[in-house]
Image 1 (cartoon, rainbow, N blue to C red):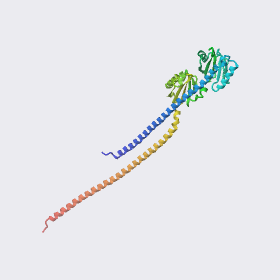
Image 2 (cartoon, rainbow, N blue to C red; image 1 turned 90 degrees about the vertical axis):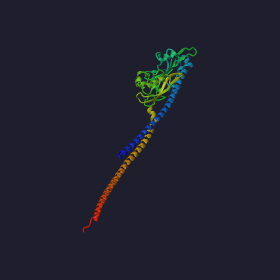
Image 3 (tube, rainbow, N blue to C red; image 1 turned 180 degrees about the vertical axis):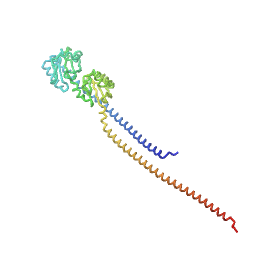
Image 4 (tube, rainbow, N blue to C red; image 1 turned 30 degrees about the vertical axis):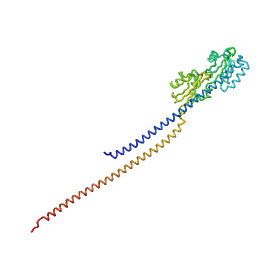
Length: 383
């Protein structure tokens, strides 16, 4: 059974549309896979690079802090400070020399006697130097005196600046008598800004913790400075994000690593590394990078490539549409010609049938005439 011409034409058009649609869908699917592959490769490269970067930053911070500790150790074991005459001109001169040498990093250098009173203190103008004050109640004083070991501590001062305190006990090398403390303080934001951004959340930034999880610098917000990461304020800030919580918990345990998360301010890639001072885990650091910045490196190239492919698709689709329109018109013309020829054929057949009918009628008429003639011939003639 033959299908009607209109149905055949409809099936043909639907088939062409399906082929075009499937081709377009397949192209978009392949394009998405390609873009996802490019982004994945770029992300993996960035993750590797960022892990190496955070490791290098950690090593640089460690190196700089070790230099400060070596300076303090050198002072504590110097001949002048070993004599415990902290008001002598020689001691003052020595402290001034070291302060000048390290003033680009530290902002205060001080000596406490065995009564925890500040005997010498050097600081920039406008910064309180605590000269002659009793600092017995300071945690880092008590810890240094009790442990007789170097101590890293932190806290706010009346100026509202968060600082690291690095102290070295002055112990008599011969009698092992406790003589006092030589120490320095470092503004954390100023210090860690030498290693990366600690002020702008919209670009790659650093977060630095002490060994207790107190934030010494955080590019996400200045309000987080001095806050404990697991405290209520910080947890509300990060919306209790479990990925970041687990990541930071591992970091404070001394484990480097990385993670990807979004606590409501955009997706970010975080890499992290501990900071070890003389084998002791004193600080931790994270390098946080918005993934939008990572992908922006190829976004322009992807957009340009998409424009090219869309233009190609538009051209191909237009050609197909033109071809379909041409086929439809051609099919219509063919149908019209077929109908005309069919009509003429039918008319010819009709005329042929009429001629055949007329011929038969003529034969019958002639037959009758001949029969009458024969009858006349056989009829007797009258006398």
